[in-house]
Image (cartoon, rainbow, N blue to C red; front, side, top):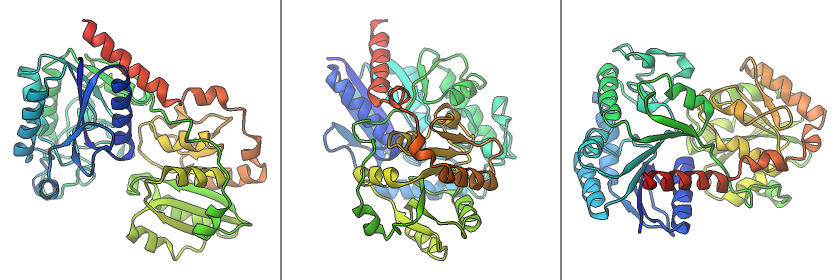
Length: 408
């Protein structure tokens, strides 16, 4: 039986769910699969192996904070992963995020470049693979990654979080050496935006193709549940605008949402923010027109919140191909988003608005326009557009790559 090993930092969140769904489809197509991950819990219905311990994860965060050597402390854990890979003997290794304080990517790629005889595919969920430090750089408009990062990294204090030492030049050279040593592996990007960046980087000699992230259209669809308003204390006479993030870090635009709430304070509008930490939820309590909801893995409840909202707002300043946009569209709720990453590949005139100026004032004007013109109830017959967001099509494209690689 053909074997596939998939590797990611987690089995949760957007990247974890994508890995798990690809694994399920591969199983259906006759592949034997194992997912290897470093943090959190695994899939209950799939074969998966956690190779990192929580104390190692926290030590890696501290080590990187001081020495700026993300993941390179995880030697013992990565050696255990390599041992398991040797035992499993996969025909294909499918990488996802190999950053995230859990994996020594130098050890992994040294083994891949010298000992692994199978095929390799790497889905890039961000820009980390071809920079000297960061996962995203558009927020600071940095272009150093195109040639050679230097010790004056403008994102040094951004993820992966470091404070004292700037190692971006050395890390850039290390990644370039490791990731270009073997040019026969495939790269997949979820957006054309990231595809174009890869072609400008030191990974440009690899074959790269775009496979958009998809969603389960049997789950994400309009669903009316009036009880959800009562559960979260949402006023019945208010127009609702919604924001959702797995982690509300700075680049996700929480500060802009707070500014937007100030601009809309005199309107008949309530803002719902889903995914807040406890501290962030406490912070938003002083804003009278914001209702904060902590992180939830309850997808059905999220669908109900998408469906009851009048407008979905995505104020992320850096992103790849955010699934929250297409989840909202699938639930019948239009999207207003900043023009960043692959957002304009998702949001068109019939499904919402992709900002031109990327300002809170522009968003406020569009929110009022959408509400006053009842944009939601005028939304298009979205069956044709939604077919492009069908996760099953995305997973099948991955299986076709697997099949093609093993035919060579």
